[in-house]
Image 1 (cartoon, rainbow, N blue to C red):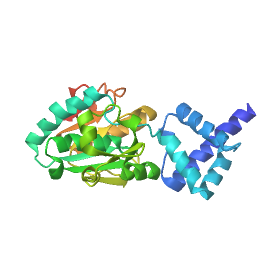
Image 2 (image 1 turned 90 degrees about the vertical axis):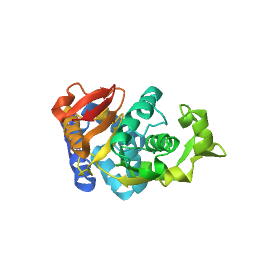
Image 3 (image 1 turned 120 degrees about the vertical axis):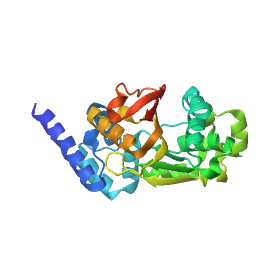
Image 4 (image 1 turned 180 degrees about the vertical axis):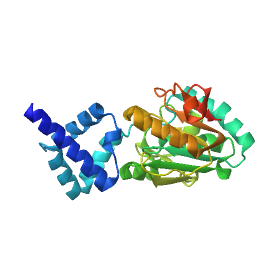
Length: 263
C-alpha cells in the first residue's frame, strides 16, 4: 500500500511540475491512458520515478520533445476517414462559402500537418485558396516543425486522391514534399487548447481524434470554447469516435455526421 501511495504521489508531483513549467495540465487528460503511456517512456529511458524523469527532461530538450510527442500521440494521415472529407468538400465548404466568400478556417491540434494540408488541397481545387485564412495550431513544437517542413512518407498519402498527389506534391527520394503554394497558405502556431484563449469568428474548426484523450470535464470546456470561437452558422468537424451526443448544450446542432453547426 505504501509503495502504491508513493507512486501516486510521484505522478501527482510530476503533473504539478509539468504544469508549472509548461502550462500543460496533464490532470485534464484521462489518467489511466496518460500514466501508462508516460510510464512506458520513462522506463525506456531508465528512470525509476516520474520526478527523476522530470528533472532529466528539464536538462535535455530532446527528451522533453519526446515527452510531448508521446503525450500528444502524433498519429496523423492525409484524408483520414475519406468519406468525411468528401462531405466537407461537397457540402460543408460550399455552404459556408455562400455565406462568407472569405472563409476563416482553423485546424486545431494539427499534429504534423496532414489535416490542414488536406484542407488546403480541397480549397485549391475549388479555386478558393487565395481568398481564405487557414490557421493550424498544436502544443508540440516538434510536430509543428515537421508540419512546416511538409515532408511525408508515402504511407501517409495512401488516402489522397491520385490526381491530388500529382498536383500538390513533389517526390523527393522516398518522401513527398507539399508544394509551396499550400505551405504558404497556412499559418502555423503553437497553442495549448485547454489553457489558451481562442481567436473568434471562424467559419470552420477541425479538431479530430484529440478529444478521446481528455476527461469529460476537459471535453466540455473545449466544446464551449470551440462554440464561442465559431461565428453563427460556423461548423465544428470532429473525429469519427467523438460524436457529441448533446450538442445543444454548446449552442451547436448536428449538420452531418461528425459536423456540428453553431446556432
